[in-house]
Length: 361
Image 1 (cartoon, rainbow, N blue to C red):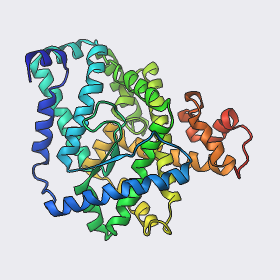
Image 2: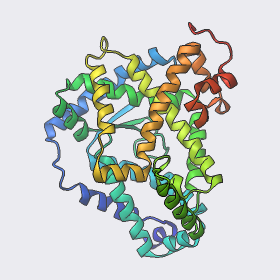
Image 3: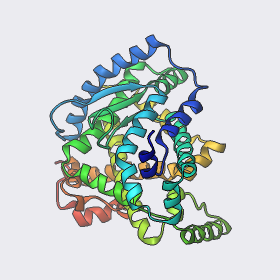
């Protein structure tokens, strides 16, 4: 990496990739023939999933099809680093003006420390992810790419005796739903990228961190989990910054909850075993212990899982009250998105936006 790149970036991205690969080196790779079989399945099943999602949601994405990209864990890390480096890094470098951030940008030691941290974080995440729609533009595969992490998927299939093609179609339905959300709703991508820019523009100074430590101690004394609501970001963000954090949480809660509802709508008659798949993966999310549980709390993953459940309950409640057409008002304009409070109390969103759509619509 050249010297000019080091001067501009807060993160040594090449070191991040190398760190992740070293951390993952103890994980045995799939046999080539197994990986190729998974790849062939997802190439076919992703297209089939598009038909199922279109039927359930009524959304009409941009022309063309999603492109299935079957990867190992290290390749998933590489793809995410490429997206982060092209989209997030310039925002971070432009807007992070705290003394700590300036030091990170200007010293190789700071850049290397950040690179190691990012690499370790992504290596851990790569062992948990099954599929991912890449909503960030500029990634190596473009905005229509859906990534499937083959070792994780095969591992779950073998551990629980899942029928591979049925389970793979079920996973594809979830990720294809995300592509529909971003390509059928014309304002979704710019709105999402605006949230990304606002969130990554949050700069934390020493006084903010010290204040957050005081809140952490006070919460712990009160018997509360200070990391439970939003992880470390929610802990150290100011009141104004929390507005951005909560807007992002509300959006992700809605999108994930909607994708889960779509998966549930494609029942056992279409995908045999779908009910069991949902039960097992829900239990997997809840089962984290020890170090994994702490990392999830630190990153806000536990809070995210609760928000996904809230999002699913929100979508269910709105559809039960107003039908699919009533719920579809959420896609009409950004102002119709539910707040985090409305996610938790769907009747408030219905009173504000729901109108008088018939439940049978």
